[in-house]
Image (cartoon, rainbow, N blue to C red; front, side, top):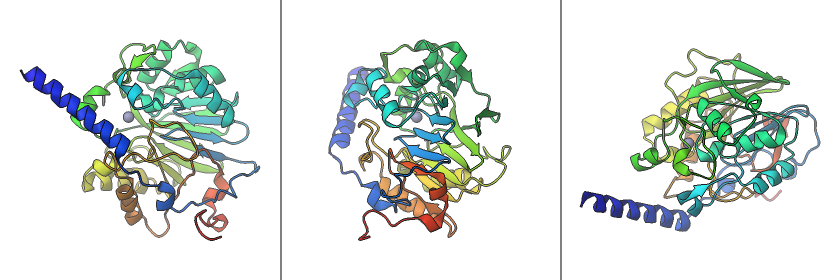
Length: 350
Ligand SMILES: [Zn+2]
């Protein structure tokens, strides 16, 4: 009897989420945030370090000699397919690599943790480019399951800098945003992947593994990429970057569902303790939709993006600014960090 009730409740919960996902309004992030660099200025041919936001927490860094990529999540399976089995879509991944100029200079692909919306395609990206996959033991299990050459798999030591060209990459153990129990159990929140996973596999096979903050230091800038809106208390107390972080690419998915105290602490840990000046929200998009320049936000009922952005705006100090990175656009770090070059937003009259 209990089992029947649980099945019915589970079914109703799935129906509720599906309905909410498909029907609820989604705020347009580009109207909620000022674009720091307008669409007309980003199509540049400048040398130097460039950053491209490719949805969720997939971020490409490229200094002309070396590329780095977090996650490399391009397949973005649809909501319905998440209920069955999922696999990396080779064609979609190959097209994305071509379209966004990800090539043999890609030195490392770094899954921020091992859930499908981060690590599903990481091993395939490494395979197609020859890059090293640098991540947790769980991400290594996914790579082994996909048959990635073991010489390309590097299980990361935390707080150890890894050098790739002019980039120094340090992974710091962090946390994952809390989730409702039913979902947390389904996606193995806080759990490791114990054996190789060969796709097609269930969503629930992609357990979290270690969640990292990724510190990237380059002669032109210091960046932190925080995939999940989680933290470990005082995670930067015993590990401090050599100087203030210029840009935090701050994962915000699920933040609107957390308490005021939680959000305040997340801000302290990820922004204040490392002296971040520019905060660029990432992982705000609906990761069940294909990657494009016009990514849409998650439905407000699932995650209230407007509330999160208001919260961040209110926490900003005068010297700090929030930055909307147009998805798929290549931004010069020099432009992003130079306020005098900031162009008006594309929705002004200029
Ligand atoms: Zn996750």
